[in-house]
Length: 190
Image 1 (cartoon, rainbow, N blue to C red):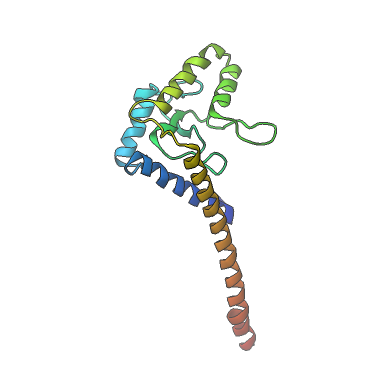
Image 2 (cartoon, one colour):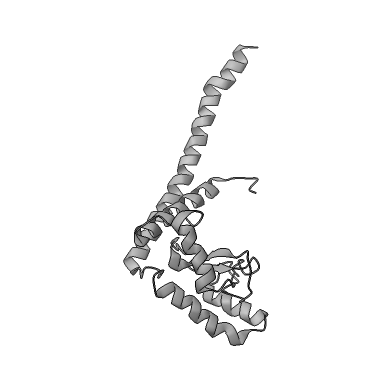
């Protein structure tokens, strides 16, 4: 539960909503993984594509979480799309970071998990399963051109900046209004 919301939180939520809408444009329909056909597809990805197992460590779990291979954020601009989601356990759903604080790619994350769990021999098999899901079949992620990726990035950055700016402007307007009316009324009633 969030106890402190910032303008950056609101802006990040707006970016994720945008990435969801763009993902749905490429998918050709709504992809709400909480209900309806989107939920059915998510359940199929978990049970049929990955056999109810975490895509990273291979452990079977009834409580698999959704991981976006190309991260669903301002760092990587991954779309919310069936080909970009995979199941992972709670422990593996903490993407590792490099020395500069940048999240590792899913493949580097997988390599570390396989090494840490002494399952290095499973790395290629798991990587190939993830790649196959991501690039082939009914759920394949759209092969975005560099221009499409750039357009998504530019729009997401603009949206992020606009939301933060609007919240700042709203605060400024609130301060002006309270200075003009609320404080004035308080002083007049004394």
